[in-house]
Image (cartoon, rainbow, N blue to C red; front, top):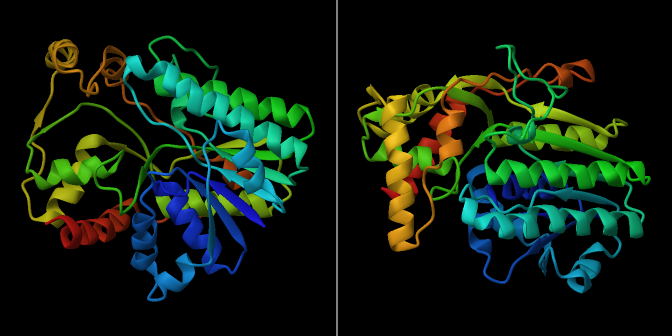
Length: 335
């Protein structure tokens, strides 16, 4: 039996669909306030039998810091996909991020060891990949440097250290470091905001770019690695290195909106992150732009995705086609 954490998120929901569609026995943990209907909605994008597939999932209410409930989830499990994480770039949330991302991952690793789990797949982020200082594309071996790193990436890197510690203690594991994951269903969070921004016809766009990948490619890579003899390795999961302008432009076209036209200057961003700090102080709301966030926009980051090809052929799906597919569902659900 397979256990999935983070099943109510973009990657987790698509992973659950893939596993259920393969006929595997699957458990998934969720928090009390999780919206399971959104997961079933994701299933409906790809199947006319979404409800039946969704009912095959054995849902267990559990938190990553609640060992007794996690132990219930681990019963009779042989393989674990750990995709759960708290995503925030607000420095004020650092302690919360450590509790979920680091301590939560430590708990998962320890339970994997205690229950003799055959293999663990951990979903990290390209934010935990080191930054190149000479302009070369970044690989899994690029040296880590925490200078100017956002709080989310800091905690995901420390979570990786927990997974590597598990591998040294006898746990077989694989790790994927996805770029920005694109896919349908979660319009208010993460990459879903690209669709919301495009829908508003916003003409300004941030400079630079980064690595992108479709959610189905992330899932395909995770499952392929888990079913292979590969162990104790991590892989960058990026299909294309694109500018933010390019991604928003594709979506805007599909939504019938004008595309981005005016690039934000770095001096403007320096002013904006300071204004955002003031807004947060006055209102208590979540930070939208931070100093480290602006630093990341100073230089386009390019990621090398060839390592996976050394182990088995891996063909990526088209980012543009995935954005078109997602845009159609966005129009049906939000417009």
